[in-house]
Length: 243
Image 1 (cartoon, rainbow, N blue to C red):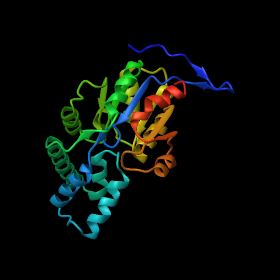
Image 2 (cartoon, rainbow, N blue to C red):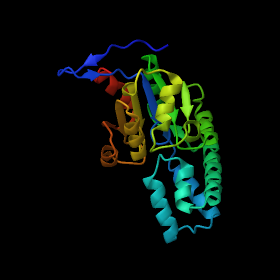
Image 3 (cartoon, rainbow, N blue to C red):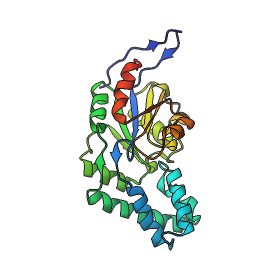
Image 4 (tube, one colour):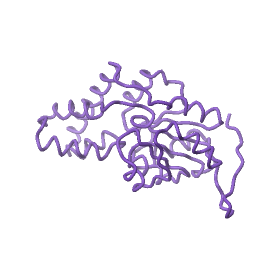
Protein backbone atom coordinates (compact mmCIF):
# COMPACT_ATOMS: atom_id res chain seq x y z
CA UNK A 1 0.00 0.00 0.00
CA UNK A 2 1.31 3.44 -0.90
CA UNK A 3 2.01 5.61 2.13
CA UNK A 4 0.73 9.17 2.10
CA UNK A 5 3.57 11.62 1.59
CA UNK A 6 3.33 15.33 2.42
CA UNK A 7 3.32 17.94 -0.29
CA UNK A 8 6.36 20.19 0.09
CA UNK A 9 7.06 23.63 -1.22
CA UNK A 10 10.21 25.47 -2.13
CA UNK A 11 11.27 28.63 -0.42
CA UNK A 12 9.43 30.60 -3.09
CA UNK A 13 6.20 28.73 -2.46
CA UNK A 14 6.39 26.55 -5.57
CA UNK A 15 4.78 23.18 -5.04
CA UNK A 16 7.00 20.09 -5.02
CA UNK A 17 4.99 16.99 -5.80
CA UNK A 18 5.94 13.81 -3.93
CA UNK A 19 7.17 11.00 -6.14
CA UNK A 20 4.79 8.06 -5.90
CA UNK A 21 5.63 6.16 -9.10
CA UNK A 22 9.15 5.36 -10.36
CA UNK A 23 9.62 4.02 -13.90
CA UNK A 24 13.07 2.54 -14.46
CA UNK A 25 14.72 1.40 -17.68
CA UNK A 26 16.38 -2.01 -17.68
CA UNK A 27 19.52 -2.52 -19.87
CA UNK A 28 22.10 0.12 -18.99
CA UNK A 29 20.12 1.46 -16.03
CA UNK A 30 19.29 -1.42 -13.71
CA UNK A 31 20.85 -4.23 -15.76
CA UNK A 32 24.41 -4.53 -17.10
CA UNK A 33 24.31 -6.32 -20.43
CA UNK A 34 27.98 -5.94 -21.38
CA UNK A 35 27.36 -4.87 -24.97
CA UNK A 36 24.88 -7.65 -25.73
CA UNK A 37 22.73 -5.31 -27.82
CA UNK A 38 25.55 -4.80 -30.30
CA UNK A 39 26.41 -8.51 -30.34
CA UNK A 40 22.80 -9.43 -31.04
CA UNK A 41 22.60 -6.73 -33.72
CA UNK A 42 25.61 -8.25 -35.47
CA UNK A 43 23.80 -11.59 -35.64
CA UNK A 44 20.64 -10.00 -37.01
CA UNK A 45 22.52 -7.89 -39.56
CA UNK A 46 24.49 -10.86 -40.88
CA UNK A 47 21.31 -12.89 -41.33
CA UNK A 48 20.02 -10.12 -43.58
CA UNK A 49 23.21 -10.01 -45.61
CA UNK A 50 24.99 -7.06 -44.00
CA UNK A 51 28.71 -7.84 -44.13
CA UNK A 52 30.66 -7.27 -40.88
CA UNK A 53 33.23 -4.53 -41.35
CA UNK A 54 31.44 -3.00 -44.34
CA UNK A 55 30.43 0.64 -44.59
CA UNK A 56 26.79 -0.45 -44.49
CA UNK A 57 27.38 -2.34 -41.25
CA UNK A 58 29.19 0.63 -39.67
CA UNK A 59 26.40 3.03 -40.67
CA UNK A 60 23.71 0.75 -39.26
CA UNK A 61 25.64 0.16 -36.03
CA UNK A 62 26.02 3.91 -35.56
CA UNK A 63 22.26 4.25 -35.80
CA UNK A 64 21.73 1.42 -33.32
CA UNK A 65 24.01 3.16 -30.83
CA UNK A 66 22.32 6.52 -31.33
CA UNK A 67 18.85 5.06 -30.75
CA UNK A 68 19.59 2.92 -27.70
CA UNK A 69 16.41 2.71 -25.65
CA UNK A 70 14.07 2.80 -28.65
CA UNK A 71 11.77 -0.10 -29.47
CA UNK A 72 13.96 -2.57 -31.37
CA UNK A 73 11.38 -3.28 -34.07
CA UNK A 74 11.22 0.48 -34.75
CA UNK A 75 15.00 0.55 -35.12
CA UNK A 76 14.94 -2.30 -37.65
CA UNK A 77 12.10 -0.68 -39.58
CA UNK A 78 14.32 2.36 -40.04
CA UNK A 79 17.39 0.32 -40.96
CA UNK A 80 15.78 -2.04 -43.46
CA UNK A 81 12.70 -0.15 -44.61
CA UNK A 82 10.67 -3.19 -45.60
CA UNK A 83 8.36 -4.52 -42.86
CA UNK A 84 9.12 -8.17 -43.61
CA UNK A 85 12.87 -7.57 -43.46
CA UNK A 86 12.47 -5.56 -40.27
CA UNK A 87 10.55 -8.38 -38.60
CA UNK A 88 13.14 -10.94 -39.72
CA UNK A 89 15.90 -8.81 -38.27
CA UNK A 90 13.99 -8.24 -35.04
CA UNK A 91 13.32 -11.96 -34.61
CA UNK A 92 16.99 -12.76 -35.19
CA UNK A 93 18.00 -10.03 -32.73
CA UNK A 94 15.64 -11.22 -30.00
CA UNK A 95 16.74 -14.85 -30.45
CA UNK A 96 20.43 -13.92 -30.28
CA UNK A 97 19.94 -11.68 -27.26
CA UNK A 98 17.91 -14.35 -25.50
CA UNK A 99 20.66 -16.91 -26.09
CA UNK A 100 23.26 -14.56 -24.63
CA UNK A 101 21.07 -13.92 -21.59
CA UNK A 102 20.49 -17.65 -21.18
CA UNK A 103 24.24 -18.21 -21.26
CA UNK A 104 24.64 -15.96 -18.23
CA UNK A 105 26.00 -12.84 -19.96
CA UNK A 106 23.88 -10.46 -17.92
CA UNK A 107 23.87 -9.14 -14.36
CA UNK A 108 22.24 -6.46 -12.23
CA UNK A 109 24.09 -3.18 -12.02
CA UNK A 110 25.62 -2.61 -8.57
CA UNK A 111 23.06 -1.26 -6.14
CA UNK A 112 20.14 -1.52 -8.58
CA UNK A 113 18.14 -4.15 -6.73
CA UNK A 114 18.80 -2.43 -3.42
CA UNK A 115 17.60 0.89 -4.88
CA UNK A 116 14.35 -0.71 -6.06
CA UNK A 117 13.80 -2.34 -2.70
CA UNK A 118 14.44 0.96 -0.89
CA UNK A 119 12.05 2.85 -3.16
CA UNK A 120 9.33 0.28 -2.52
CA UNK A 121 10.01 0.26 1.22
CA UNK A 122 9.40 4.02 1.17
CA UNK A 123 5.91 3.37 -0.22
CA UNK A 124 6.65 4.15 -3.85
CA UNK A 125 5.47 1.96 -6.73
CA UNK A 126 8.22 0.85 -9.13
CA UNK A 127 7.89 -0.29 -12.76
CA UNK A 128 10.57 -1.65 -15.08
CA UNK A 129 10.38 -0.76 -18.78
CA UNK A 130 12.35 -1.84 -21.84
CA UNK A 131 12.66 -1.45 -25.59
CA UNK A 132 12.90 -5.24 -25.98
CA UNK A 133 10.04 -7.57 -26.83
CA UNK A 134 8.17 -9.23 -23.96
CA UNK A 135 9.90 -12.59 -24.48
CA UNK A 136 13.32 -10.97 -24.07
CA UNK A 137 12.24 -8.90 -21.10
CA UNK A 138 10.90 -12.01 -19.39
CA UNK A 139 14.16 -13.86 -20.09
CA UNK A 140 16.14 -11.06 -18.43
CA UNK A 141 13.84 -10.98 -15.41
CA UNK A 142 14.08 -14.77 -15.04
CA UNK A 143 17.87 -14.77 -15.38
CA UNK A 144 18.16 -12.20 -12.59
CA UNK A 145 15.43 -13.67 -10.40
CA UNK A 146 13.53 -10.40 -10.65
CA UNK A 147 10.07 -11.72 -11.55
CA UNK A 148 8.62 -10.42 -8.28
CA UNK A 149 10.92 -7.45 -7.76
CA UNK A 150 8.50 -4.75 -8.96
CA UNK A 151 4.77 -4.25 -9.29
CA UNK A 152 4.76 -3.85 -13.09
CA UNK A 153 6.99 -4.58 -16.09
CA UNK A 154 6.35 -3.02 -19.48
CA UNK A 155 7.58 -3.47 -23.05
CA UNK A 156 6.51 -1.38 -26.08
CA UNK A 157 3.76 -3.82 -27.10
CA UNK A 158 2.15 -3.39 -23.67
CA UNK A 159 1.78 0.35 -24.12
CA UNK A 160 1.35 1.04 -27.84
CA UNK A 161 4.66 2.64 -28.77
CA UNK A 162 8.16 2.44 -27.38
CA UNK A 163 10.54 5.27 -26.56
CA UNK A 164 11.02 8.14 -27.28
CA UNK A 165 7.23 8.26 -26.98
CA UNK A 166 5.82 8.56 -23.45
CA UNK A 167 3.47 5.58 -23.79
CA UNK A 168 5.19 3.18 -21.38
CA UNK A 169 5.50 5.82 -18.65
CA UNK A 170 1.86 6.78 -19.07
CA UNK A 171 0.79 3.13 -19.18
CA UNK A 172 2.53 2.61 -15.84
CA UNK A 173 0.72 5.69 -14.50
CA UNK A 174 -2.67 4.41 -15.64
CA UNK A 175 -2.22 0.75 -14.75
CA UNK A 176 -0.82 1.19 -11.27
CA UNK A 177 -2.97 4.11 -10.16
CA UNK A 178 -0.08 4.93 -7.83
CA UNK A 179 0.20 8.65 -8.61
CA UNK A 180 -2.40 11.40 -8.57
CA UNK A 181 -0.78 13.18 -11.51
CA UNK A 182 2.19 12.86 -13.82
CA UNK A 183 4.30 15.26 -11.76
CA UNK A 184 4.39 12.51 -9.12
CA UNK A 185 6.34 10.25 -11.52
CA UNK A 186 10.12 9.81 -11.65
CA UNK A 187 11.70 8.31 -14.75
CA UNK A 188 15.30 7.04 -14.83
CA UNK A 189 17.32 5.74 -17.76
CA UNK A 190 20.68 5.75 -19.51
CA UNK A 191 19.71 7.01 -22.98
CA UNK A 192 18.52 10.19 -24.63
CA UNK A 193 15.30 8.39 -25.59
CA UNK A 194 14.67 7.55 -21.93
CA UNK A 195 14.95 11.27 -21.20
CA UNK A 196 12.63 12.24 -24.04
CA UNK A 197 9.98 9.74 -22.96
CA UNK A 198 10.14 11.09 -19.41
CA UNK A 199 9.90 14.72 -20.50
CA UNK A 200 7.01 13.99 -22.88
CA UNK A 201 5.13 12.14 -20.14
CA UNK A 202 5.31 15.20 -17.89
CA UNK A 203 7.23 13.36 -15.16
CA UNK A 204 8.39 15.48 -12.24
CA UNK A 205 11.86 13.89 -12.18
CA UNK A 206 13.70 12.70 -15.30
CA UNK A 207 17.01 11.27 -14.13
CA UNK A 208 19.78 10.19 -16.45
CA UNK A 209 22.31 7.62 -15.27
CA UNK A 210 25.89 7.21 -16.50
CA UNK A 211 26.02 3.40 -16.49
CA UNK A 212 24.86 2.86 -20.04
CA UNK A 213 24.80 4.15 -23.59
CA UNK A 214 24.86 7.94 -23.41
CA UNK A 215 26.96 10.53 -21.60
CA UNK A 216 26.10 13.45 -19.37
CA UNK A 217 25.85 15.98 -22.18
CA UNK A 218 23.54 13.79 -24.28
CA UNK A 219 21.27 13.11 -21.31
CA UNK A 220 21.10 16.78 -20.33
CA UNK A 221 20.48 17.87 -23.92
CA UNK A 222 17.43 15.63 -24.09
CA UNK A 223 15.80 16.92 -20.93
CA UNK A 224 17.35 15.23 -17.90
CA UNK A 225 16.44 17.12 -14.73
CA UNK A 226 19.26 15.31 -12.94
CA UNK A 227 22.23 13.18 -14.02
CA UNK A 228 23.41 10.51 -11.58
CA UNK A 229 26.40 8.20 -11.57
CA UNK A 230 24.01 5.26 -11.20
CA UNK A 231 20.44 4.35 -10.30
CA UNK A 232 21.73 3.46 -6.82
CA UNK A 233 21.73 7.23 -6.15
CA UNK A 234 18.04 7.73 -7.02
CA UNK A 235 16.56 7.05 -3.55
CA UNK A 236 19.00 9.52 -2.02
CA UNK A 237 18.16 12.15 -4.63
CA UNK A 238 14.45 11.90 -3.92
CA UNK A 239 15.11 12.04 -0.17
CA UNK A 240 17.35 15.12 -0.46
CA UNK A 241 14.74 16.95 -2.50
CA UNK A 242 11.94 16.02 -0.12
CA UNK A 243 10.18 14.07 -2.81
